[in-house]
Image 1 (cartoon, helix red, strand yellow):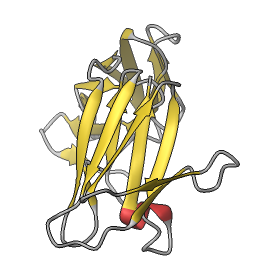
Image 2 (tube, one colour):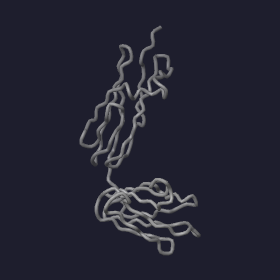
Image 3 (tube, helix red, strand yellow):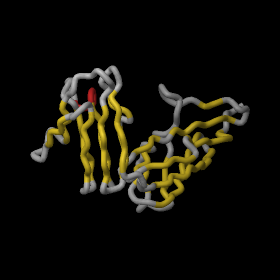
Image 4 (cartoon, helix red, strand yellow):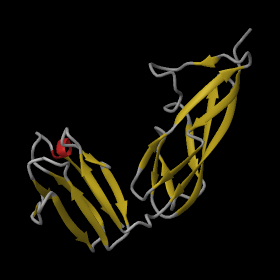
Amino acid sequence: PELVLARLEVAPDSSLLMPGDDQHLTINAWDQFGARLLHGPGGDWASEATYVSSDSAVARVDKRGFVTGLAPGAAKITASLTIADSTLTGSMTVKVGMPTAGSVVLTMNENKRWSPYEVNLKAPATVTWVMFEGAQAPTIWLNVWSENAEKLEFVHGVATRTFSTPGWYYYGTGGGLMWYEEGGVVRVF
């Protein structure tokens, strides 16, 4: 018998994003016998589906299934997939929120990686970098590629900076080849 598209799943079924965050959707399909229909190397049908956002001011979705959070609120993302002569739709809900925390402590581990790597804060936001005991105090560079690059020195293993202006602030200690090898990003809203 000819295979018929009988069930469609959009994953994840819900998501929480900050403005500017992206989420890639996965589309899975099953036939009338309950067997998963595979497409391409990953088996996922995201590139073949069509998408619609219920509120494109809150979240947009492109033709590849990438959802981008734009503004606080909620939107329903609907995916439609046609295989042979059968079309099904599935959906997911995306909530776009704003951070409520105004401060965070970032800690360095023995591998000189900062945790958490990325933080979202509400302005004015205070960030404190704390190194593990016995670490040699490096320098934190903020936005090193910018003409507004800033150097923060550690005092007794701690460096602190308050961000009043919303934006993305990339930081790194300069120990790796790239900023993210020993750094991260602070997003202030």
